[in-house]
Length: 367
Image (cartoon, rainbow, N blue to C red; front, top):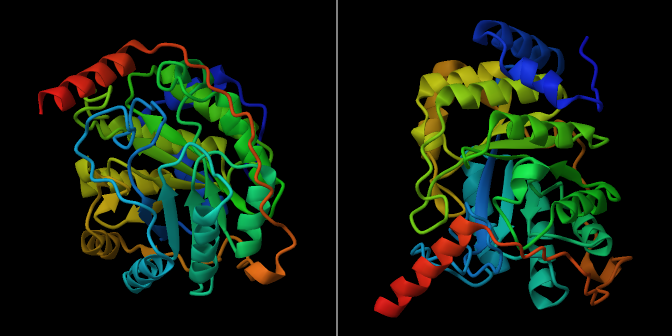
């Protein structure tokens, strides 16, 4: 029986990642079967409830206001719009709705109150609810938990060392602090990263070290392949090889045996055979729907056809953890505090991020 460890070293993880592929797959698949049903995959729908205009400079993100990417922004959706999308998602086989807002951090006020009502509404549909809203305080995490939030997503993105080459507007410690704030509630943690941003394999291992040291480890770890969007600093990055995705999924499964490993962004460039190998290696969660916030994703009907071919079934909601209760706003023990936390702004200069920003200004000036 595999044991959950929190003391993995980078070298140990590199040794696993670089194993002969057949040995790596056999070990990962064996561990996967110890802790999970190998023929079920959790299906989520990712919904961008507020798109574009983000003040951050994440080098991979088309929603950063400083880059010109032709992303069509929208203000915060209404509760009824979100409910309608959730009902469609449930009808198509999703057990979870993940709501993303292009914010640096949550601010108390009318918009956050609307998000809390969205959480209540979806939880009452007997669906798992996940949010990714940027950095949050402990009080805000408690309010989300009361509303019925099942999971909070806050990715580490990459290793702490390479993070400085990706983002200059927030610190790595802020990400860890947000995860710690969530852990003070009954909300599960979803945290992973992106490969294909120009990082080394050592950085992939470093990210897994950071995730595995969290105690408890995240209940869900998304492994994203960079989708290079024109106008972002990473627009020239080459697509990630499927073998890299398979190795990353398998290594994650071995390092975090009880975690749901999410095969996330980049699936449009993966063959069904490649995805099947990722499922065999331990991936047991995907996003369905034609978009992941702003980037392309396979059509849900294509996914269901793939599931049928592979003999996979969508996982039912609340299999891993009981459904949280929803506390109505008027009965809440927690209230808005109007907090103004001092999240860090390292503001060091990243050459390719600065180049993309200046290119954006020129494009706008030339229009």
